[in-house]
Amino acid sequence: MFELNDTHRMVQDMFRQYMMNEIEPIIDDIEDGKIPLFEPLRKMVETLGIRSQMDALDLSKPLRGDSPEKRRPDPDDPLQGMEVVAGNLLIKEMSRVSPGAAMSFGVCTGLAGGTILAKGTVEQKEAFGRPLMKLDKIGAWCLTEPGAGSDALGSMRTTALEDGDHYVLNGSKTFITNGPVADIFVVYAKLDRGGAGKEIQNFIVLREDAGLSTGTPFQKMGMKASQTSEVFFDDCRIPKDRLIGGETAAKSRDHVKEGLSNERSAIPTIALGIIERCFEIAVGYAKERVQFGRPLIEFQLIRNRLARMYVAMENVRNLFLRTMQQAIFGGQTKLDVCMGKLYCAEMATWVANEAIAILGGYGYMREYVVERLARDAKLLEIGAGTAEMQIITMGEELATTWKP
Image (cartoon, rainbow, N blue to C red; front, top):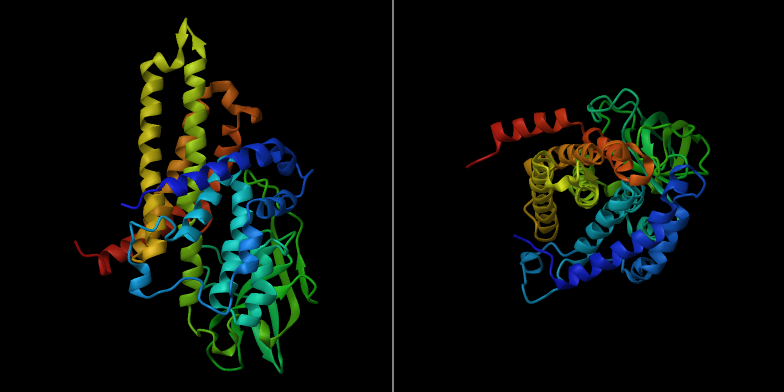
């Protein structure tokens, strides 16, 4: 089993200290709209050295080697896979303070920026990918449509019509993270070349492109640090060199499914951050809060809640570590992704609600944090594919590909 080493823990402690000192004190102002989220996040990437790392990245080369020699575990190399570990630890520690901030950051760098760096041409990586990774630009990843939620591919209506040296996009997307503030939109659409078939491709659309507009931010139950809106395309003309990967791009749905898999693989990371913080707050409160002449933690019913929360936390931690191991060394299956997404999302919601129950009336108050984490956790069960879709997909995989 992959485990964090001393170097990883040092990085984790650095991230945790930064989040608690710099983000925690202003998170209410961010959620209330008094401070734009990406202002402190840009300071974060500068302070933590992420900007300098992105500046030094050679985008003409693959991000990670795929040869077996490079993917073989090396116990003597504490830095092996560090880019994967550090990225996940950053999102986890951010999620302990604000899952909404983690989601916006992850969509910008992991989904929008990551898609361009993984699939784009060198020119696209330089012009659009690197600025997203450094937060010089804000990115949005546009897949979901008003009539295409769980059936994101089959019910897609957004089209990109080939017209000379341009593509013309028409359609709309909804529930788009960073939609109101994004500069660069990675948009999935059915490419129409005038023939019978329409393969799904992804395109780079810019805020200033004529024909693109965004709706007013949605008022949501949770994830309030992250702004969400509709995105509209009304005869939106973009140059042909904005087709991600160029004309040699994959002409299948595989790259779309890969994007969905990447989104779902992030759920254990966010969930673990939520669960860790909720558990720590609940234990601390149970030790300090005195009722009937003794601390709450001496009551068996409270201990029962905490014990089960701990079991959930350790299970999610193991899935988090396993997901990182598979990202570094390979071997992740569709069954793994859906299992991790389903279980970790449900446990994040459950643990957060248990923490509220232990804190009682205080747990319902904003200042005790678990209220925010519980609201934010619920989206993990809905976004990136509902629990029902994970179960359906897992059932198909078990019936067709799984072997004991």
